[in-house]
Length: 512
Image (cartoon, rainbow, N blue to C red; front, top):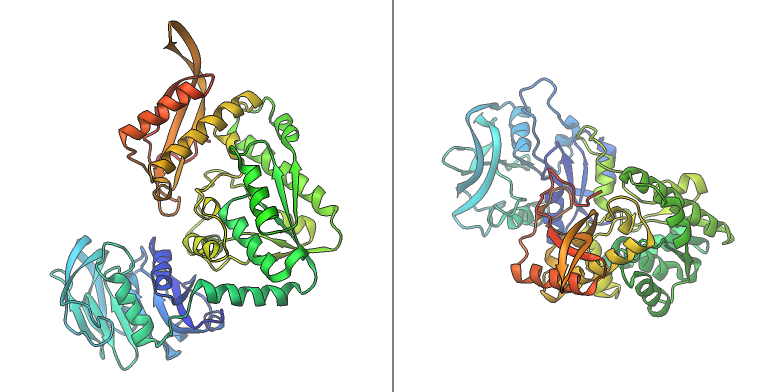
């Protein structure tokens, strides 16, 4: 990281990523490292300040997570949030105990000192609390700088040692002016210049890729999604026609998707593009398969096989471009324990080992919203930049049961109507995903003077910030009515439309 910024040590809080995002929203770079990162690793990131995240542990437990003690000797400003404040209190000899009453939810914070952390913040603000322990005694050299009714030490500092702590969560939207509090820490206390912008990022990343690749050749598996598209355009700016993109048409795409990719990348950006028509191969491989996990594996493996075949036809390729994002990087070094595999995610993660290619991951420092900003800055069209997430196995996992050409056509038309009407209603960017699912049942209906026995389409629309949890979207009845009427009238083979109101959890966003 060339930029001076903030290193966040992650003690297992569900909000850790939010801390990084809030700081970046103020044009200040931030990175997340495990709580037990070595001093060498921390300093490799050129920090001007360190934040301890919250976490589920209690500091008085023998196995409570603790940072390398040398972190306190670096002379860098430190801000502890929730568990981070309790950790600082405990380390310096104060007392933390289990609270008689847990404090969850909104609390009124009274600010006692406006000098640094609370500069330009009103005397009283609402903040978000989430803790079961409390500070009973402050260590020597520390003073309270804010309090709530239940927490006399809701914010503390040791000015001499440049250490601050807050019991509340400034990173969540429920804390009023929380972003400004974090900004005060980064700018007023740490002295960071807010120069983290997408314009600067593009300039620096292009130079970095040029140095990494030189005049050698690279390939990119292009899906038409925002991540691979932005990665491809950025790398092409750096190495020009030494990048070749490979787009595999698996026959499981949405309506007009292949044409859009060809127009955008071949015609607009003039990026060398190989389009492989592999529809028949995928449909043959999926014949008779109904198990969702088997479908995913067949599609993923066949994609890799076809991509390898095409890559071998290109001489002297040494690099593979991937649209890995920062949350993927964080997950791989997370302090949290192993989590169950909900479903196999389709990506090209297995390619570098098999093909002996070096990786270019130009987006690995960015969150999704930053990738969208970058896409806009690079001139990508809104249809790609603001495109909702689309699963790698495509429409195959939105057809419940066996996949065939006829059902794909039904689903493709129905899905296009859902997307078109959601866009017309001005809701497309507000929703995480909105799509159609084809169910493996038929129902009786009446159309004109005839009884029908046709298929059922389910509409799925969810709101989410990261896809980890999601709530079903309360679409207006008028919109649902319009979608239903269009699907019934325009899509042959469908006589019933239903709306899925399951949140995640307990359901997943996709049906398979």
